[in-house]
Image 1 (cartoon, helix red, strand yellow):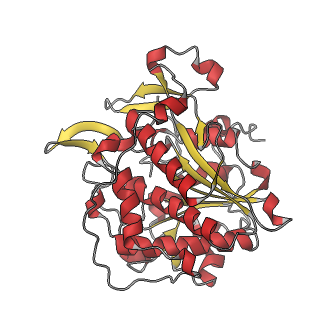
Image 2 (image 1 turned 30 degrees about the vertical axis):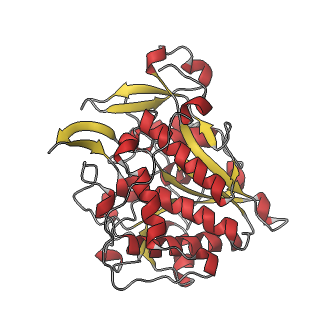
Length: 380
């Protein structure tokens, strides 16, 4: 989850073939830490194929948040390894590649360095523009995309996007000997959920609408991957009826009702949250609206384009956020498994039912700077 709101949303190696870079290595699964001991959880799966175990989630998070991933900084070596792992799992689960290089949608990015000295990335206007950037500043990498075509002869022409960002903050100053920002909760947890939703939908009843699964890069550096996807969508945005992002579901939030329960950003803005809750999904409105979480994840870019777009989360404002202590052994995998099962049900409802709609006066309006970055016309 981004630490800034949409004020500007952007802070300011030679480009080898991406397939070569992705083949350079993939982390092996770490042994994994101990799960939390949640006792009461909510949200039963609707089908046997939709069941998720704590070990299912732990396995994926332990790889994505391993030290060998080097904090998954956008466009750097650890991010490429993470992208390869996600792509391999999408292939194993039976969802079709939807990128321009297999499962990967290449994104033209260049290296930046923030005022705090942390490595960052900026989106280049095009690959042709990237060619004018000094070779040492060019970054490789991109979004990891998969598609599951819908079964209904009419509804399959429309799509649901299910996404999370797999990037994090990389390597920084050491704290007690640890310099890797592993990002287990932020957002290896959400990325693992997207992968498991793909597994469930591919192995169970085929949804009526087409479902796009997206692991996006560069959320932490200004929605870089999402902004490129918007310019190059798998399914035209005019036929994308909802965006459902998953962010920081690693620990229970008492304000959401505890273990296995989640909240939805911007719940009051559209019909999505109420429909899901009415169907039995253990989901409540964001209990901390003052934190502006609706504007702090990839969903906001799609919302500005008019697509009902929200993020499911259980972030409880824990102090490990954006620190080296966001480690895999601090997550509650029993809780996470229940939230993922509920997310699978939610995606099935969105894919098979009526498309969500904005409530009157609740569709967000993009500020001028963001409109330009998203390629929107100037406001009248």
